[in-house]
Amino acid sequence: MSVYGPKLMDTGDTAWVLAAAALVAFMTPGLAFFYGGMVRSKNVLGMLMQNIFAMGLVSVLWAVVGFSIAFGGTNGWVGNFDFAFLSDVDYASGTIPPMAFVAFQMMFAVITPALITGATADRLKFGSYALFIAIWSIVVYAPAARWVFNPAGWLFKRGALDFAGGTAIHINAGIAALAVVAVIGNRRGHGDEAMPPHNLPLTMIGTGILWFGWFGFNAGSALGANGVAAQALVNTHLAAAAAMLGWLIVEKLVTGHSTTLGAASGAVAGLVAITPCAGFVGGAAPLIIGGGAGIVCYLALRIKTVLRLDDSLDVIAVHLVGGLFGSIVLGLFADASATGVGVDGLFFGGGSDLLIDQIVASGSVLIFSLVASYLIALAIDKTIGMRVEPDDEYVGLDRSLHAESAYQP
Amino acid sequence: MKLITAVIKPFKLDDVKDALKAAGIAGITVGEVRGFGRQGGHTETYRGAEYQIDFVPKVSLQIVADDAQADLVVDTITATAATGKIGDGKIWVTDVERVVRIRTGEEGTDAL
Image (tube, rainbow over all chains, first blue to last red; front, side, top):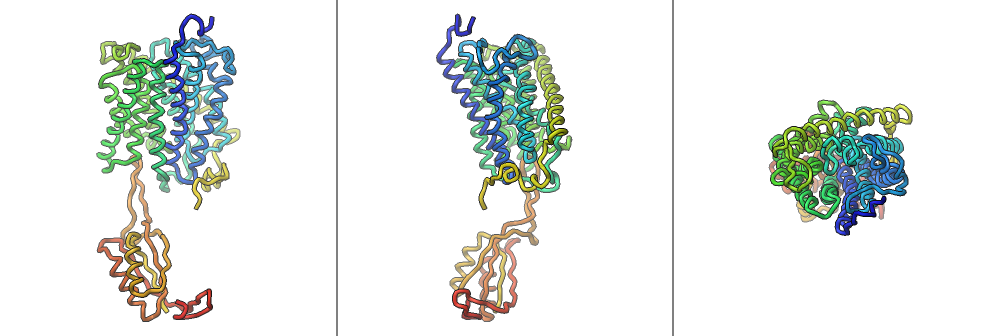
């Protein structure tokens, strides 16, 4: 029996999810600008290209096999090929047509590997990057998405909550970024020469696009035009706002200045942290989660120094730590009365069950992605090599890989 | 014939140019340069990481002048480019062996 059958499609719900898919699609170019402004001017096209290219490659792979691995069949760990090439997709997705769900999930699949590019900036061979995200989105992302987004997934069944992708997207991409940097090493000259951002206005444009698109990402995850979506949208905005303030206050106390890059980074950290919580919390919780994320993520900038890893644009601090923070504090702040979905967390009389499930879910995705991402990157590095030649890195990716320059002298 | 080279604060360029024109100087060659002197550089902070920027942006001026005018040029620049704060710059004067106007082939003072 088809899902087009007994359950009536809702036109309002469908319209909102289609619009939300478009909003999420816009986030990948937004991410490209966010990162592109932070690299050196000789690498900005390389960064933009890695991001826009994910829209091409991952979308195709998602249609061919990715969606089927994430949502085909009933196995808790991995899907089958029933929905390969998006044929006969009869996945039950509430009051929206399965294709609206396919489209919405496709945009998630696209942006997740793109998040990794911030850590590996300025030094990946283009072909090796393409191969890495191709394998990664099928072998790592699609199963992880299945675990938390698919009601058949083992973490979903266990009771873990992830409204829009704190585990499958941010923890997953954040720890993968750490794994790949561990394989490829630091940028040449890292630690010896200054590598300041070349165009912070570009980063600010990217921040605006990400913030805007995130309304689709989180409120769209309600999969309907309803009160859950409205609460998720308000939570998303408030968390970003509070996180910006949190980051700027700590930054001012530590360095003496409040910076534009700090405002942008804080907002994004808040958006990351509220992602798993968006439809499950209400009241003051988004302010606390956002404000906390701004402070915690700023302090987490030091992790890469301790690990001696050149996580060039702080994917670990913003996405891994922001994702972990949001996913775990959801176990405290979840409030089923806020939207009528989800369960109660520790602070709302639900006991510690959810908190434990959140820790299990975060830890499982983290360990799986760390190991799998490291092995994929290592295999590519040992065969065709992950890094560009030293000369090419010195000249910059724009000229050496793409035979272009962003700015004419 | 003297070559007067001055390195000054960029925002003083217009004042210095106007003053030199008023003093009757025929031409100036200007370049944007970077460097350091006693002022040193400055620090910038990105996501909590401090970067030392060693080279400060400055403007350099080159003026070729008659021996008799050289002191006037130096005094004019000194008077107009000074702010009294560190980093005002330097002026140095060197001898010039030969000056040629390319269009006409005139030499020496006629070429200025």
